[in-house]
Length: 249
Image 1: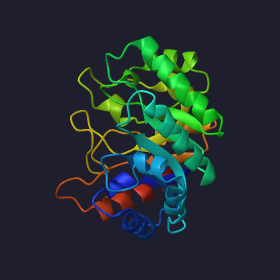
Image 2: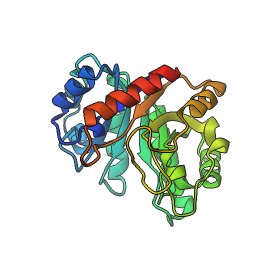
Image 3: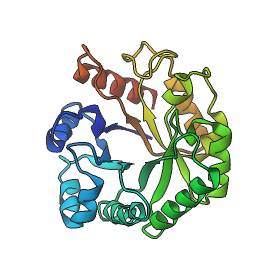
Image 4: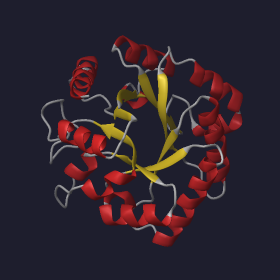
């Protein structure tokens, strides 16, 4: 395992400056979010000019790209055309996994299965793993649903985000039963009341999680995924969580 950091940790900075910050913080890997509503690289830009997107992803200040996170506004079949381009980008820059959202809570189950099957089929042609983000308010907030989705969509994994099993209206939930599907991990500190709190003030059991991941043979990234908190020094928080995670590896 190794420690990575998301570009969403510095959303207000241009992408290149974000990379420079992560290098200054001594991260060696970056998780790049492709968000249609951000000022960083957008999914539509990947589709519109693949070579330019490849060039941007090669200019990472020597950071290894550990994963792409996709936040798209495309609809219908356009989603799959766009995803094909993103998978080609991933293959070109040697990114092995892409994190996608699952359907919002209430999405018909069969509809979600067909959608995820299409994404997995597209990514498989390029040798890329598709994993869905475990997230409150989505079908992936529930471990039983996650298990059924992964069992029905061969090759689908999950991006485990423990915070979404801690801070939720129905109380803290265990994610132990879906650990076998983990292909990527997002981390921040979280309390039962707040999704994101300062490092050390939450209830994420980093040591226990790392031990569990070791037991299933997980060897990929532990990604720091924490946008800035108000009245908090982001650089100090980022340095603190990097040192904490690395001390546990």
